[in-house]
Amino acid sequence: MGLLLPQSYHVQKSIKINARPPVIKSLVEDFTQWYKWSPWQQIDPNIKFNIGEPSSGVGAYQSWQGKWGYGEMTISSLSANEVAFNVLFNQEYIITSTLLFSPNTKTVTWHIEGQATVPLISGYVAILAESILGNITTLGLNNLKTVAQLSDAQTIMESHDNQNRTSQN
Image (cartoon, rainbow, N blue to C red; front, side, top):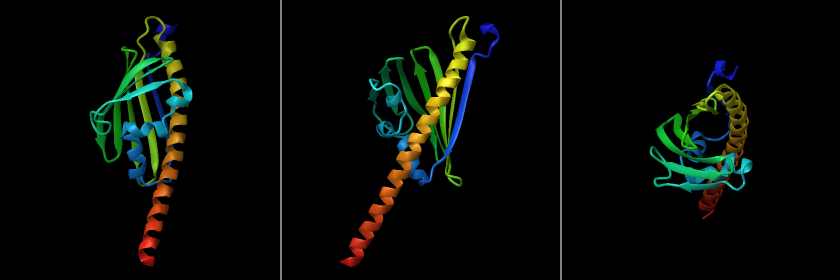
């Protein structure tokens, strides 16, 4: 039965974030900012990340080791409205991931696609991957929303405070 199931999986989740797009994007396109919102530390508190140089932009790289294995992620493309990643998990699973930013609606959409490669049971693995990654993606987007909105509000408040200090002098 598992041989008849699709071996590929696809997850897509969206969330509206009430923050300026540059604030949101800066949290995504720089791996040194991921600790603020990434869902992985909540799922595996013992996970260890290694961030390469450069830490942001095309070619930025991070690797990790955790209780479910190890992997590496590289930013493969970057545009005004999109950050795309290539992920290699346990030296055998290749995953593509994209975060899309819609500035007009302040919506962030996270796409993840992959292919299960486990002989005989790949169909079951793909179904399980969709379920697990769907929950992880939702958690990550909710974290990103919280961090981006708080960061944006703090930046705006600091800007107003600086303007008030300048105008009083």
